[in-house]
Length: 308
Image 1 (cartoon, rainbow, N blue to C red):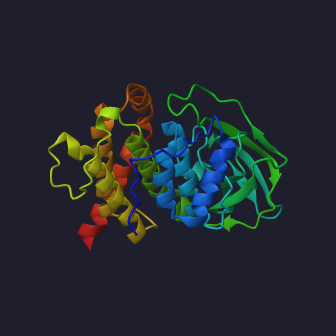
Image 2 (image 1 turned 135 degrees about the vertical axis):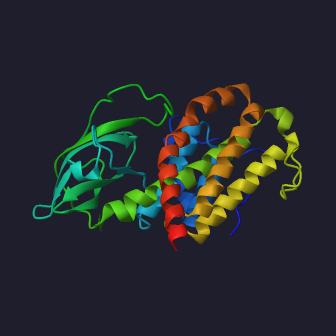
Image 3 (image 1 turned 90 degrees about the vertical axis):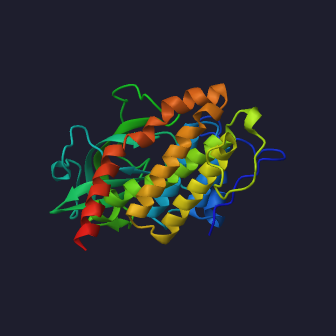
C-alpha cells in the first residue's frame, strides 16, 4: 500500500488546528482512523495541519493506535512513562497495586493533560514488572499540575506533569512487560508517524514560487532544486513501506529510511514560506532529540546482525 500523495492543485482542504478548533480536528482524525492506515492518517492530516504542533499531534495519535489497536477512532490518548529524575526504569516511583487496582505516582511530561485527552496509558511498577494501564483522563484522583518550565518547541501542544492520587483503575486494558512490548517500540512508532506528519506539513507550506511540481517521483534528478519535493515524497513513501513490512520495531532498513527522510526535510527549509520557516526551525528539534537513542538502537541492531 503506497502513500496517497496530496493534491497540489484545486482548492486546498481546510486547515486543522489542535489549538483553534479541536472539535474539528477530532472529527477529522476519527474519520481518517476509520478508513485509513495509521501512517496514511499521519501523512494526510499532517499536510492539513496549521502548525508543526498540530502535525505532531496527528502523528502522535496515529502512534497511539499501536499502543492500543482497540482505541476508539475519536479518542485522544497519551503514553505516560517519564518521571522527574528517572535515570533507570528500575527506579520508577509510579506504582500499580494489583490487589486494590489503584495507581499512585506522578508522570512529568503528559501531552495536552487537561486539554481534551480522553485516556492516559500509564506505565507503572507492579511487583517485579512494569505494567501499562489505561486511565480515564478525568478519573477521580487524576491531578494535572503546573508545568515546571517553558516548553521551547511545539507551544500549541503543551506537556505538563500529572499526579495519580490512588486512582482506581476500572479499564480492562493491561499490558505486562510494558518496557519490552510498548516503551521500546514506541520510539519507532512515534518516529515514523511524526516524521510522516511533519513531511506532509512541509509539503503544504512551500512558498508559492515552488507550487509548480514536476510529478515524476523516480528521483532521477536529485541534483536539481525541482527534485527536492519529489525526493521528500519518495523518502516518505519508502519509510511507510518499511513500516508496513515491519510494524513492530525498528530495523536497520527502517532506520536508514527515517534518516533519509530527515535529510529531505532539511532540504525543504529554504522552500518554506517565511512564517513556516520560522516555526519549523523552532519545532524541528523534536525529532532531533531522539538522535542519541536511535544511535543506540542502530548499534544494537548492527551487533545482532553481525553476530548472526
